[in-house]
Each structure stands twice: as structure tokens, then as C-alpha cells.
Amino acid sequence: MYSCIMRGWESMLIVGDAKVVIDKVNAQEVMDAKGGAILREVRAFRQMFPGFRVQFVGRQNNRVPHLVTRKVVVLSASVVLHFDFCAWLRSKF
Image (cartoon, rainbow, N blue to C red; front, side):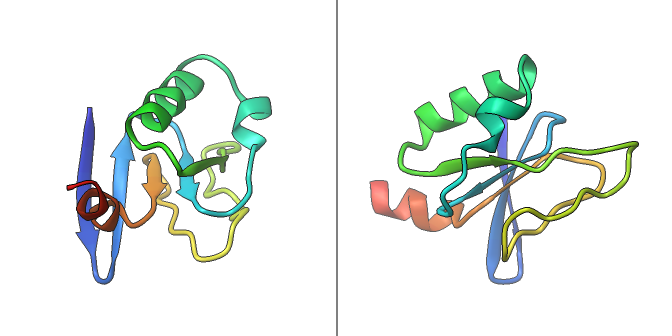
């Protein structure tokens, strides 16, 4: 369900086909913005990785969305959960 890829110094988690961004920035837009599959993915992710907050980026007319956080990488055709995934894993073991 989840896959981790590395790109340079950053790590990203690719999930499903929704656009969400994980960051330590205060953000609650996802809970009010969309329902259904996106929220199910986000809830499952938050249960697996507590302590990270979720921010919805969204997509309009299949265009690359505006970035709503700083230091976020958004891929135009996939869902990016962006955060230091490997550091999070190291902190758990």
C-alpha cells in the first residue's frame, strides 16, 4: 500500500492516487477539503505514522496544483506524502 522512494536528500511516500502532503507544518485543510478515498488514505497513514500532520494539496483540471506549504515537492500525476520517512522509521526502532 505504501512505498518509499528516495530523491536526493529527501524521502517521499507515494500513496494511492490522491494528492496529500505530510509535513510538520500546522495544517488541517485535508479534513475539510475532501472526503472518501483521500480521507481513508490519510486516516490509515496517520494511524501508521502518528505525530505527522496532513495537508491537502489537491488538483484542479489535471494541472499541477499550487503549493500550500513551503519545502514541498508535488508530482503532477501522483500522490506525494512528503516527509522524512526514513528518519521517522529510524526513530521507531
